[in-house]
Length: 488
Image 1 (cartoon, rainbow, N blue to C red):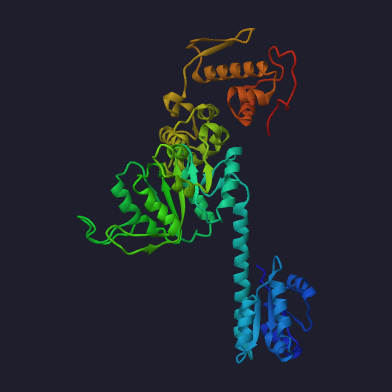
Image 2 (image 1 turned 120 degrees about the horizontal axis):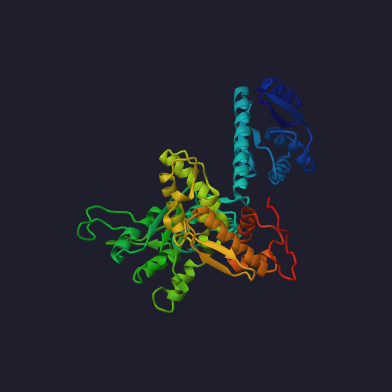
């Protein structure tokens, strides 16, 4: 492996010192001495080096301190600039402090100790390289993908949600996450915390559902020793534990009306008191709340304070139910399959087409949480590499029916026990899709809306079922909105 050579540009008017440092640094460094510089050359100088070494000593001697500081400002404003290290006289620390304010990352006293010079230059280069790598990774993380931290989704509704979450995450505003139970509201809260400036602080989660008001108050705000019978020690609450981090309150619609003013005070004043204490405690938190209830409807009913609602609803993010983003089902199912197979040490690696089709057609009232449980059950029951439909719950396998399409397009259902379940389901789906295509004049977008499925899912059905363009009796006025063919 080739040894890394660090390129150093030494800005000094003492050419003798420049030559001495270049010789002393040795073969691990490539040193270039620059005696004259100006602001226009800053970009060219920075492109040609990994570390910029600036001689404050000669700048001070020549009365060029201001010019040197302006040059440092110009370097610091470049999109990609090397770290700046300054060489200074011990008695001129005032100029050193100015240089630090203008972007210097390290310093070396004159006369320089060459061992110290090598260590400082190498440290500055490595630290700066690590910073650039962190920025690159963060930039990659913020690019639109099918993942937002632990959330998965390539469908249009999820991509729109991911983009909005990435925009608001760095801004320290309160967020209200809405959506049905099991859609992943806490995962979205964790993603926002992970992408925010508070990601080094704690994320404290608490559910307000189905708990007595006094217990919720103790959980949120804590208590002092002796505040009530059984309070043997002082206890910090969730609000205090989330200081300098994020507090996630799930099922905020279940928060008692008596506790809502106390939470409002935390949001307005950033202060609270523990139970049994008059001491005011200050906190610095970001609040993310989630609910599956309509808070706007609860306000006129007197079940939720209007002022608290507007405080919480600075930014609202809605997680769509799984039935409205069926294109994500194969991605989520495969993710859960890999996770469960590793957990239970099973050899399952994929779903059969029939099993995947059954998953895509299910209505999923329990959303992503229900899907994860179903996949976990299927992995436990499956003994093969491929998970078949037999491993799914009976309710997802449907009834065994045979469909016949008459010349008028009507569907007749008759039992036929001579064919397998998979054959019957395939015949039913093929007849239904073919009929819908014919009635919509082979306009796939309209057909998808009629069937209540995503266009991508309809494309996959057409391919899986082997439906050919013009099959049967097409509508007399047929026009194409996009071609019926294999979807790549």
